[in-house]
Length: 294
Image (cartoon, rainbow, N blue to C red; front, side, top):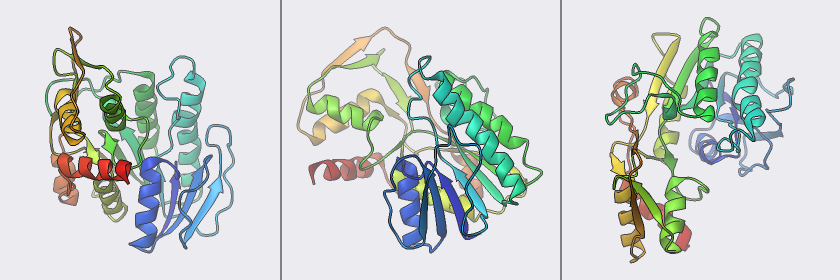
């Protein structure tokens, strides 16, 4: 399976994944996105394509073996104002892409979902835990999971529920937002002195796992995997680690709100694919800060 199509190709995970697949593994990759490509490596074809609007896919130079569907609406937090964009990109485009895969005899479909589909609880979440999406974004991801499962008679379907990717160059997400608040001495609100409890995964560890999934021969034609880091961290702990790196104080405000819990049990994916984490959070954070200071 050497010919790969990646949606959301210019996004944070997509751009890191493409560089790795081409430079380290020699895959032929085609990327779809509305943003300009970040990679110009040999063996990479970029096609400007708006998944939220287009229904007919372009002709590709090679037959596609594997589709990795990473695209999601950049407005996923803006509900209800951007409900249509979220639906069109997160749900409608998935439905069209799945049918395109069937017609073009794709062998494997890897769908990037989210740990937010689960009902929150203060424990490591397993793949068979209760589903209760806590946002329109999470509901859109779970809807696409259900669509993807219907195509498992035509090709292998891998649903990857990702728990908080971070790394150098990422913008607008939790770790970078906390860094910005620490640097600017802004308030950080902590529900019951915890804030949230999460298992973030460093981007290269996420990419390494997706690479393994490309080559994974499933016994079943559909698999659901959690993917997160191996350390359970609180927002308070993350903020203090970041503050120490910059020799600054945390401006922490404790509230009576209920903390959020989003922690991945990785036992299933480790059993099937082997170890997934090479970076501790301290190692990953060091690389993020080195990138900022470069």
